[in-house]
Image (tube, rainbow, N blue to C red; front, side):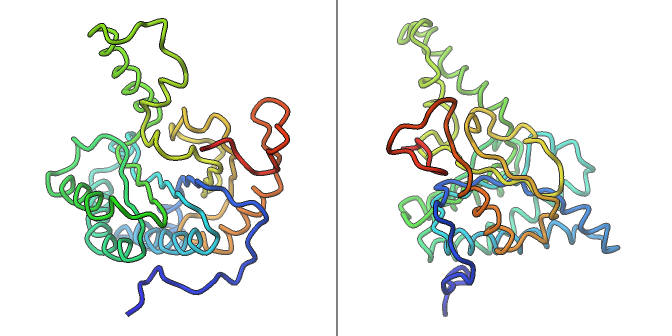
Amino acid sequence: MSSRYNVSASEFDAPSVVPRHVAIIMDGNNRWEKHRGLTGSKGHRAGVEAVREVMRACKNHGVEVLTLFAFSSENWGRPVSEVRALLALLSRYLRNEVRELHKDGIRVRFIGKREGFSQRQQKLMQEAEDLTRDNMCATIVIAVDYGGQWDIAQATQALARQVQAGSLQADDITPELIGHNMSISDLPRPDLCIRTGGDFRISNFMLWQFAYTELYFTDILWPDFTESEFASALDEYSRRERRFGGREPDDLVAGRSYNA
């Protein structure tokens, strides 16, 4: 039986330049549900279908890394019933999807604080990472209990401990060194961030990593975000010139980043 992510080539033409790493702020599940008069976290469940759609789109267009803002540090402040539903959905996703991702050679990573999750949920995260650790086809990064300010703080705390231990001088701390201590520092920084739902902000997501990321905002609510919408975002990205604060070198073309 073929994997649910293992599909034929996309009907949408690939843009001339494809981002290596796409990050997505998946906004609009609750509004999608309310607009349809639904209840019971059906918007979040529909959002999982959109994740599958975007996973197929990434494969079809050759995107190497997809990072999803699944649960922010601020989400703990939502109604208890909604938080429970979100966490139950995360657990269900991990139980049902990870083996399919593994079949397709996709590596699963998590960023954020795990202490607030149940032991069962932490175990599911660890098992997903362990099972897929050596996969090379693509990477999906799931941000849970994650905040960009927390990410910067934990990186600087790690460096402060080295200074305290005498293994590092404070004057030797550089932006590059801080970056090496950030989450997923071993992956290329995001080339493109997509936010659905109509808001024009990044909501404390990957603040350090987004220094030169192209931002794409759409009014489409996340459950309605299809492969066609994803292709439109990539097409817009391919038309942008990324100068990184200065004139591009001869080998830098529109849409291509410095990421190693």
